[in-house]
Structure formats: structure tokens, C-alpha cells
Image (tube, rainbow, N blue to C red; front, side, top):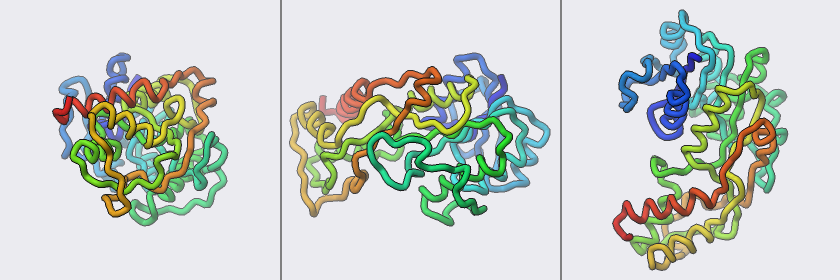
Length: 290
């Protein structure tokens, strides 16, 4: 199977590409050519400017791909420019739980209906991230209704290669005795590991599934539980102070994603505790406190 991946050089995209290669697929990664990758001769490469329709047409106008997996769709124009240029049987979009307007436990896919939401054509940075992602989904499902597609809504994605350092923030502040302001320690939150996110995207590409799907590790965990574990692991006490540095996940209420659609289609998610605590162990060792 010929697969085109946009955003395949780091984090979830790297794990996705590795999954596809291990399954024997012919993978092409599209990048701006500025970020290196370690796939050597295992993949084909296209140098493109994602927000330039002419660049996309020149790169993909004569190509056909069985599946396109797009980790870089941040606006309705992103979707339109790409799908007007590329020829494919199926399109898999990486989206986000941020499209839901009201966070609560057991969020279901129907709570944001991209097929019927108001659509406007716009580029990146013209709206807040959550609204831009709503527009990206709406562009796909309204302007390209006949294209087989999967929209994957992830919660926060964490892993040893997480370049956002949002979860690492808490670990480092405990380690270095730096005060932090955390206002939602009791909120129960959903997460997924970067490896599992990549594996799920590869599964969406390979399987006949279509539609909007939540994807999240089984269960939830509170930031208070994460801090308790990290404190025991490191033998240090978190300094919580309203004057401390604001924590990156402040203000987020308890929420979880209903993953019944994905599970009933055949994908099994791992429990959150199975990877999150070992991830803290990994950071502890890397930071030299073990």
C-alpha cells in the first residue's frame, strides 16, 4: 500500500511511519526539508510548502496514494489545498479533543458535528487553535463528503519524545524545588502515549474504518496522582504556590473520551497507568536522580 504522511519526521509522525514501514508499506513523507529524519532509504521524500497550493500541486499532481495521513491539518485551507492537489482513496486526519466546546467525562464524537458546523475558509493563525481544528474537520467532511476518511480526536499526547514538555514541567519542578501554581490537581484527565497514537493512526490507514473517532488510553488520571507518584519516586516534595510558575494544564476540568467506536472496530487501547508511571521513571533516570 502506498501511504503519504504529512508530519512524519518527529513525535507521533515518526512512530506512525515506523508502524507503516514495519507492516511493509511504501511510505512517502512530505516535509519542508528542514527537519531531519532517521528513515534513510526506507522512505520516499517530497519537499513541499504545505500552505502553498502551487507547491502541493507540483509535488502530488502526478502521484496516487492509497492513503494519506495528515498530521499537519491546522485550518480549512490546509485541508482544501492538500485535497485539491493529491489523489488518494482515503484520508486520515489527526485532530484533537479541543474541538469539543464543553469538557466533561465520556465525551462522545457526536458532541461536535463537523458535517453541520458553520464552515469558513481560512488559513492558520486566523483563529484560536480549537476553532481552526473545527474548521479543518468541517472542510474535510463538508467539501469532500465522497472521500473515504477518518478524523482522529486525541487528548494530550505524551511520551519520552514530547517536544512540548507539558508533563515534564511537573516532574522538573519537583526535582528542582521550583514553586508551581497548579489549580486543578483533582481534575481527572485523559491522555495517550505517542507510541500508541502512532499505532492508532497506522491502524486507521490499514483498516476499513471511516468516520470520526476518539482515541485515548483506557482510564483517566489526576495531576495530583501524577505528582504523588513523582514525589515518591524522586524523594522530593512539590512546592505548590499561587505565586509559582503556572502549570501548563491549569484550568482544564475533568474529562475523558468515549472510545467505544474505535474499540468496537477492533482497536485495543492500553491502560493509562501502564505507560504514564514508567514515563515518569524514564524522565527521573534521564534527569539523573535515580
